[in-house]
Image (cartoon, rainbow, N blue to C red; front, side):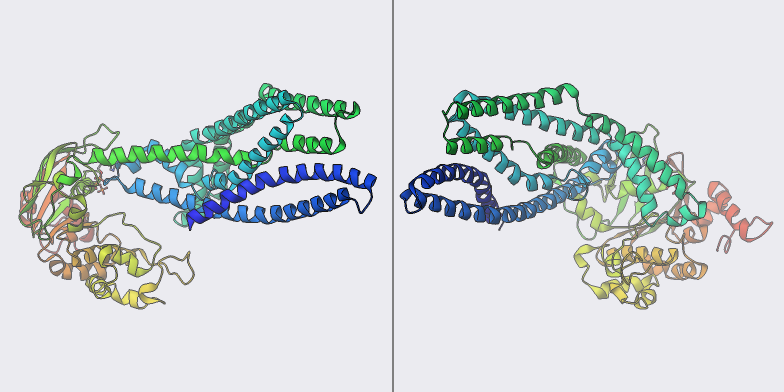
Length: 603
Ligand SMILES: Nc1ncnc2c1ncn2[C@@H]1O[C@H](COP(=O)(O)OP(=O)(O)OP(=O)(O)O)[C@@H](O)[C@H]1O
């Protein structure tokens, strides 16, 4: 299909280039034939030739008119195909690295901004494809016209042949320079776009109104946009010398050509037909670089190399992330972990930061048991989960699963063994079935499995009461879509994690699973906690001690190390950090008294 369209386009381009020249030459011949026919009379052979030439011109004009829309339509379709193809490459490239560190790299975000506009905003490479046929036809037509001028004065033809490409080259490099200048402002423009999206999209809408910051947003958008775009404006400003040199050359060539033609005609060296042909040729030669299409040519030349650089960079990142070549990645059996997950002397600092979040961190997580991790804000609890799920690699030490270094395991298979409910889980603007099914996409069609997961976290009733049940889109931004309350969203996310468990995950990580739940929902979840985590290696992170105390073992993370380790009762008896935090929270529910023991800190 694409190949046929490409061929059709090529034929159209050749026709679009050749027909104007053919029409010009035939018109010249027609003028000569008419002069002869007037002299020889209506029945003369010259009159017959004139009629024949007239019919030929008519036929060529009809074909030319038909070719143009076909050429435009084919070019537009091919252009869109190109945009889609490039978009797919961007999506694949951005998701190639297994971790997420690259998404936090400002330089990569700048490049991603450039290429994410493919197919949507300005500088679409498809515009290059759409412009190419017209530009090619122009150039071929101009070339043909110049060849005709050779027949008049070879040196004049030669001058045209040299001058125009130089002018076109100059213009193209100017356009590309302007485009590059725009891309250099990527960081600033990201800031501008962020402000714009804050104002245009849902998440901040409530705060914008409550704080009354709409005018502030508009003002900030205006200010940052002006400052980001100023260098591009400067680049756009015509450079007088270049403009003067280019237009001066073309003007001089035109003056010389028309003067020579007039001189030849006055001296009687040129017949009227020849004069007409050369004048048409001269007009054709001038069509080399006229129209917006020439500007569009530079679009792909600026954007596509950026995409290729990004791909290269992300591929390098993906390979660098694999400590062992992929072929050596060990398969992960469905029962893993059977014995333990161990953090062995793990140190970690985030990319481009100096501060160690973990230093020489040791922890053995027994398989099939539940472990709660507590610690103050910023202690590194979520970081542990990110390392465990392979989103980042330890800066030092290693994590082992049943004795095997995590870095040597097939990352995809390992991730299928781990189900994570992140504290900042995603709220997909998709049907409920996808919001839950995405926990294990390979089982996303299994409604029974999804129902089981939803039932376990008590959200099945909510789903079945939705206007379109499992097909209801969870966003008010779509027709018939609904939004959920914070707690309902949390339960949907919890169901997603449990769906992954239903599909075979053996490690369940819950980072603040009850933060948005009401008292009854939280109590319900406790009741089921033992059932939900039965046989699973469960890691629970929470600031709610009423949740934490259900775990079989609790650790306190402090200063990048395990500061305390034991059961709820053991840690209370220890009278350390855990006991202090527990009592502080429990005290809130027992006004004026600090307590310890069963029942405290239950919300
Ligand atoms: N992507 C990141 N890049 C750089 N630093 C980060 C990043 N994510 C977290 N940090 C830093 O790492 C430290 C540990 O963060 P982490 O999210 O693991 O803490 P936490 O114990 O889960 O905290 P909380 O109880 O507030 O959820 C913090 O100082 C935080 O600022």
